[in-house]
Amino acid sequence: MRARFIGDPNDGCSGPAELSYLGSVFPKGQWVEVDGKAGAKLSVHSHFEVEADPLDRDEDGEKGGSLSKAEIVERLKALGVEFDGRSKRDDLAKLLEAAEDAAEQEPSGEGDQQPE
Image (tube, rainbow, N blue to C red):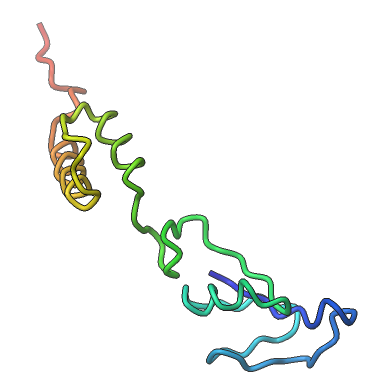
């Protein structure tokens, strides 16, 4: 996740050339990497712009992240896995992880045929 200090938008983006805030130094107008907690705080601050990493699905500042229950159900269906839709999200996530691991272990079928 990245944040950029833009200055005061209500005063022509005035402000210092550099600002220290939340443990980071923000040169005005330049993007700075921040963690998810700082990004969340800065995203509601009018003096900053925040850009989330599109691969950071749970907005914790790290690539990856948690899938929603609906996304897990969709992937389980795509893999042809039977499941109880009343199950908790975490139980479905474990089932999906096992199903994806099993799918990776299966031979692809390419090159498995013997010549006649």
